[in-house]
Amino acid sequence: MKTINDFNFENKKALIRVDFNVPLNDQFEVTDDTRIQSAKPTIIKILEDGGSCILMSHLGRPKGIEEKYSLQHIVSTVKSVIGVQVKFINECVGETVEEAVADLASGEILLLENLRFHSEEKSGDVDFAERLSKLGDVYVNDAFGTAHRAHASTAVIAQFFPENKCFGILLSKEIESIDKVLNNSEKPVTAILGGAKVSSKIGVIENIIDAVDHIIIGGGMTFTFVKALGGTIGNSLVEEDKLELALNILEQAKEKHTQIHLPIDAVIANNFANDADTQIVNTNEIPEGWMGLDVGPKTSEKFAEVIANSKTILWNGPLGVFEMENFSKGTIALGNAIDEATRRGAFSLVGGGDSVAAVKQFGFADKVSYVSTGGGAMLESLEGKTLPGIEAILN
Ligand code: AMP
Image (cartoon, rainbow, N blue to C red):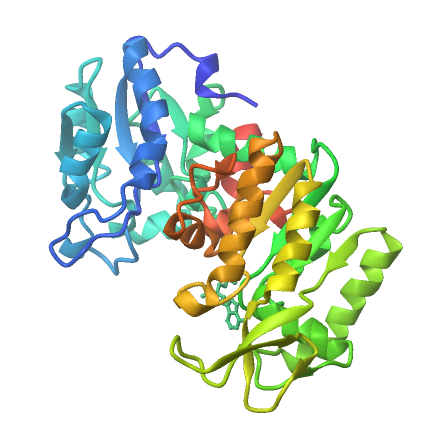
């Protein structure tokens, strides 16, 4: 696996695909600079070598050129995060861009305009990728968030750098941490799968069932399993067409000696609202008119025990409706258990889908070993898929 540490960038122009798809407020100010912070080590290493950086990214989902999605809005944030002046050009291919690149001196950064202002980016157009490739001596992919897309700048472009292509520091860390959980893990390995639906996690469950020792199930998908086992779930979230599949997963787990842990009690509510009436009941005895919105205290205790005995932990998805305070306790208790296990030396990886939002909201981001920067890309990696952006560098 070639990374930027295999290159000396002195007098070289590094064309870096970053993921600067950051959230902006109504004034077009960056409200969360995590993705820019995450690209910093790669940019700094290249500048310190005596190279220059040409940064390319997408922002949002523009249909053609839309001013509100201009990367101009993020220039000042990139400058303050990296601590170096940032030049900006309002195009990403063509003569004026090539001239700006030619004028770029060692130690300088040039940010290109939103790649998705050209539809050729998403369609993976080879000519467009070739035009982009003219802008650098070395192609660096550091955008894990888009590594599952075969776009011009994330995958197709790599063919124009047969020798001079590599992973940035962020992307190589993402690859290593997934590998540490699925292939080179210290046992016992525990995966916690929460979130809303079984259907969105089924690919992950089927892929990891062999690699892990324990699977903890939480969140809305609990009730599809509980109903499949004959429990009464009231008005809880359920996917009727996945009942058989749930039983099938439990059967597969038995054959593979993977233990599946389902919640034993639930915090139930008579309404999907923070101020609803609540009670704590057994997960398989939820009365009509009530729905399970969080795991109960007995479940939290049981899950904490499993986690305390784990050496490798993967966390994907909240255990309850964590956005509402009254249904966030199970997710917080889980975070605390993972924090303690990590302090005792376990490796913990959080990522995929919305998990990162929960981890950040409750202050666990600094307490786990690694928080992935890619929702969809992480889920697809956990499903065992080879991501086009990664494959293009490896080939
Ligand atoms: P995901 O993107 O699949 O990780 O799902 C995250 C969403 O699942 C969050 O918005 C949670 O509010 C939601 N969720 C978690 N537990 C439940 C539950 N018991 N019932 C309904 N939604 C839930």
